[in-house]
Length: 460
Image 1 (cartoon, rainbow, N blue to C red):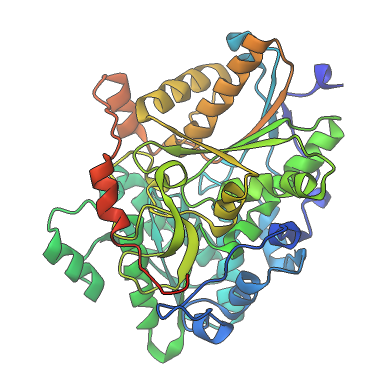
Image 2 (cartoon, rainbow, N blue to C red):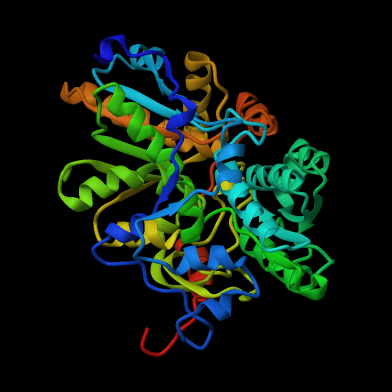
């Protein structure tokens, strides 16, 4: 049947999932719980001042396999979902591979990425709780853009702390956020206590997601009358839950084609799109019905948490204001290079993704920036979509998998998530086209500095 598979397969609107799938329910060993600085397990009351009440419930529930998607969220999903499942015929022919390459394209919305899937949910829950405003961080700007769009829809004030190097590299992302009514501040900034502290220590800091998170949490806690909350665009269990719509739609579309992936590939910064994409396929692996499916996380060599980090409890933010998560981490004090894949410049990784990697259910690779952009340019010329640098990490690895199939003369089905478009990343593409884009890999000595910031807690 796949010989006649369309270039793009769209499910019907009535096939948009009515429930999010919670992969933790099927994991034989659950991710370790969030912990407070003193080592105590974080409870709902500890998280309630920071996150919306319903999001806290979702964050802490490892047992419920499904959560109903509220009607107002599904209604907004209908504006841009279902997203298409695409067959990369032109890429297959160019590679001369017997492999079949499919990708789930999540860039067909105003925000330009998959981030809107969780932004709508988080903004809805904030509105339902009668809050006045929410705060967040953003790296490359996809999450900030998505949350600005969702906040405008539900009538919420939004403060965004944007990593400074991305604030400067991607001004039009900032302009879109402001168009939707968000207030955007480069991080580190002099508007928060933690920002001022960071600037006093490193006046020329290009920023990091960890610092931006700290500033956003501080701002949320200072919104008058307890009417504000913080929202996070990746890493957390609640975000992985919302992003399961990617995998659920992919699963349904492939089933219509009579296909099932042998390899599932996703870029990994905080891990939300990867966790969402793999969710139903990993469920099959964990239940034993598809034990041979391989899953590959692709991260930048400049910020290699999964491939060179430590599996340990660490703070989610540089200012150590958030609870600690058991994850692969480079240390909350690690400051990544100003890589153009800004959405992947995070010191840690989703506890779900981390646990799956640690327990041997998922592989990880780290790739260089110039190799990623070479793959992005080839993909754009063949498939007519200019990918975001983050997404191009998955493209690179999917191409590597397809080349391996050619060498081994194996016909495998490869699935990856094209998380977003790169039309606001033209400075990076310009640098690549001019031959001035470089690569960076932290030395062992540089990693040691970050590792030194990982807290040591007796008994953990």
